[in-house]
Length: 104
Image (cartoon, rainbow, N blue to C red; front, side, top):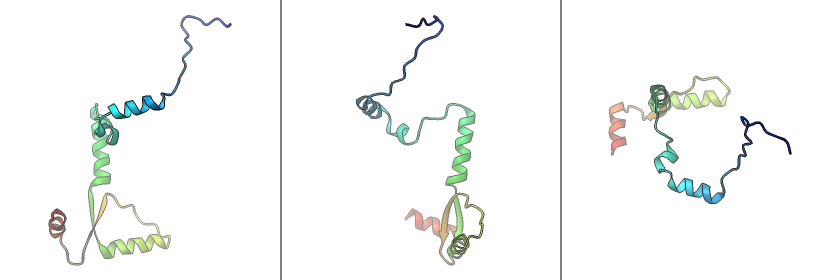
């Protein structure tokens, strides 16, 4: 047997059993499971806000503009990325009309 100095330890990493994983999942809050933990530092809050702004803010476009964009992509033409969620307006529709239709 090999002698191990006192300041060194032999750590064994074992994964939890299926039963233990199920117990942990059942004990965990659904919000934490889906969303993740709450940010603790101002940097984490700022990072989350930046991601929210980048990916979840609506991007208004007309159907013709969106169709043209898809056609350009289909033909291999580089197009700038859409920032946010594309909201397609019908011909002649205003932003407030689209908002009212969405609320209904």
